Image 1 (tube, rainbow, N blue to C red):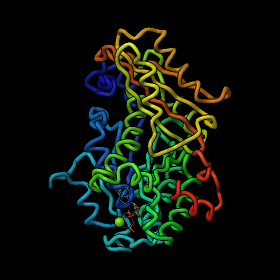
Image 2 (image 1 turned 120 degrees about the horizontal axis):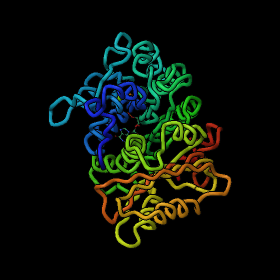
Image 3 (image 1 turned 180 degrees about the vertical axis):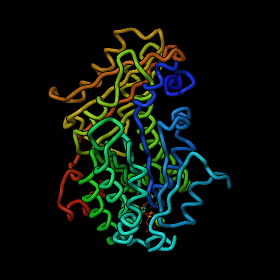
Image 4 (image 1 turned 90 degrees about the vertical axis):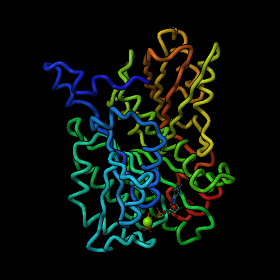
Length: 372
Ligand SMILES: Nc1nc2c(ncn2[C@@H]2O[C@H](COP(=O)(O)OP(=O)(O)OP(=O)(O)O)[C@@H](O)[C@H]2O)c(=O)[nH]1
Ligand SMILES: [Mg+2]
């Protein structure tokens, strides 16, 4: 896909330089061991728009209370990954040793570095907060980071950034204590997030269990986190013929509840239907689209994409949802595409098939989620 030309200062005329300041700023923050893993995997394998990283449109952050884990997860082949910023929190409390599963310590460490966290989230429009529920650092610090973010102003005027939390639920074998901590943490993060994307580690086991551990987690991250981030950032950074902008994303994402993203690709004479079908494959997240409150669809094709094809993509996706859904449709022409259509869909306010994620009661959450 073509890089965002106007995102590079060198491509702008002097008169246009002001426009540069109005780009959306996205921060991907991973906290705790699992969060740091997903930031690294997203960077190394996620195929993010490097131009957007270079210009600061997308910023990656790894936050941890564990110094050695933080170091390891911001390196690749023993080289420091310069594009991933890192922050050790609560060093006066835990002295860089992690939180050993204690949520309250994770929260305390984040509170202790409130000002530094505030400096990261200030002026940002969209925050993707990734972590594993059940541990001390991620579960404790994520709601604090999200709360701090909800109290700052975004780049776009008088509103806080949109916060999308992406978290994993522990394996059953990790025990009841972790499960209870995770359920408690999920309840907390929902308070401060516009939308929560949940990945059940048991589902990862079910689908990728035969792969080596790192491969299995990477595949899951790639499927959900990286695709989601890439889908969002590509949608924002490629100006379309019918353009989806930050306000549109904001309108759809702030409908609350849980959300799913789909990225699909189709080729040949049946490319539109193929791309839509592909985008609905969510092996880690079985949802009922009929309950969706918002739907955003961006259709990307080459110069050969007909108007009929662009419209029918929206029509096909539309069939999956109810009539009263708020729909945002965008079309982007990428001259590099030939006889190919990609679609990026985001559905918000969806219910998982048995609707337990929507339940507020702690006990119900922790006893049912892992068995999905
Ligand atoms: N999907 C996935 N889950 C992970 C990964 N690493 C850890 N987890 C899950 O995330 C939970 C939290 O683990 P960590 O992220 O290591 O914990 P932490 O937030 O660093 O907390 P402390 O180490 O206790 O300070 C674990 O119980 C696992 O279920 C990963 O790479 N991918
Ligand atoms: Mg840790």
